[in-house]
Image 1 (cartoon, rainbow, N blue to C red):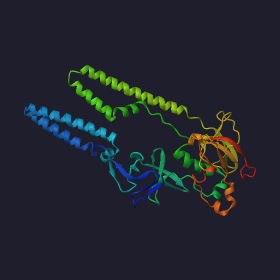
Image 2 (cartoon, helix red, strand yellow):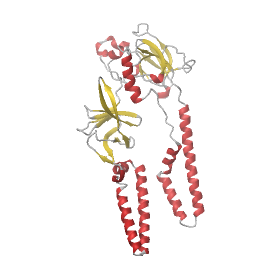
Image 3 (cartoon, rainbow, N blue to C red):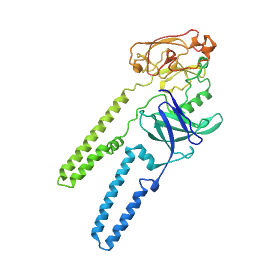
Image 4 (cartoon, helix red, strand yellow):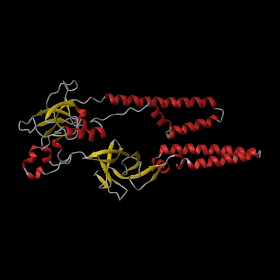
Length: 385
């Protein structure tokens, strides 16, 4: 699927990303102004006043009818509250309001293209970042574990810009972060704001998962049936059924947590690797890499994770010098090793040197993160040794 771009009008931003149709700016509605709170408060007040009026006149039959009405309104209130968890459209309608200016927005409604997932209501983050000597406010949101940043000049959100579409001449001249100032600037940009070079599998709390199961539509329907049975002669049977339902959901939640723990245990620690910073090679863990680093995949390291094991590429890399054979079975499922060549030959002509990198067209020069290095050969003519 080609990358789509929806340009925004002044004040209403668009989005440039594969699989996303548009983003809508929203502002939270708090307190009694919410559409799932204010109408019911009015109904509660009217019913209570009418019931008290009939009680003062000893009209107990009408008073009883109003008590039934209070019960019906309470059930409707509970149902409306549950719909805010079941339907993102309904939650957006009752708990947020549309805004035209990005400065007023608090949340963003992300709308994917058809058959590409469901909508999500995500918070809009604001943070101060440095651009040269100035400190500016950056707007961003996270959607499906991807960060989208607002570009004021284009009036749209786009994914984080990585240095992966530069010319081959630019990459061949790369020397990593040559000074401490550049290293600190890259650290502030990538690590402080967006985290380390690793994928974390979060482990939710048991209570959070249990709440998700207890408010599921089918479970709510089962509880409603149990409450109806309690009105008849099946009181003890209904309580036992409710106990069994809760017990079953607890076992399902426990199984989900065990599966997540097993998935977390499959994560291997990042191997140490040599990185060229400040004019020298330094050994550091793979999760400390920064975009723009120059690394060595052939130099042996001394950490326990790397000794006696196959070399695993810590991140997507561009081969600047030498050749290697990589196994990409973890990505493609094919056990056939892939030959990787450096981009040094691309500088033989000015046209190729000015050509921009493409992840699809030039994958023979790219080492993908998580793949294994079976064999590598250095280049004695490499600019950085």
